[in-house]
Image (cartoon, rainbow, N blue to C red; front, side, top):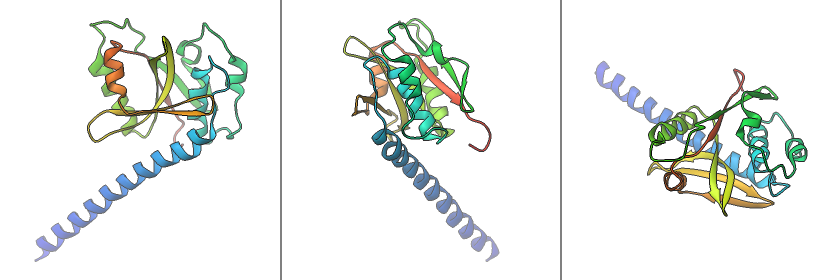
Length: 187
C-alpha cells in the first residue's frame, strides 16, 4: 500500500512539475513577445544588431522600455557586426559572438542548432543573423516548436517580424552567426 501511495504521489508531483514548467515557458514566451517585442522599435534601417541587443536588455529589465541608446549611437552604421558586441558587458549581461565561420557545406549546422537548443533550455534567448532582402537582419530566437524548429522575432521600424521556420532559413544559407549571452547569478 505504501508503495502504491508513494508511486501515486511521485506521478502527481511529476505531472505538477511538468505542467508548471510548460506554464512557465508559455508565460515567458508571452512576456517576451507582449512586453518586449510589442514595445520596441528598430529606429534606423541599419540598426538591427543593437536593436536585438536592446530587446535582450529589456527582457531582463536592466534598461527601461524607452531605452534606445545603442541604436542611437549606431544609427545607420554599415560596417557593424556581432563583433562590435563580442565579449562586451552591458548592464551586467555579457554578449558573445559564435559561429564566425564560412557559410558553406562544411558549416557545423548540427552544432549550431544544438547550441541554440541548449541556450533556450537554459532560459536564454539567442540573437541570430538571417538573410533578408539581399542582406542580413537580426532576430531573437525565443522558443523551439514541438516539431523542433525555432521561432524568431525582430522589428523593422515598428513592424513586428515573426519567423517560424528559422532552421530552414539557416540551412538554405549554409549557416549563420549567433550571439549568446550570460547573465549574473539570480537574474
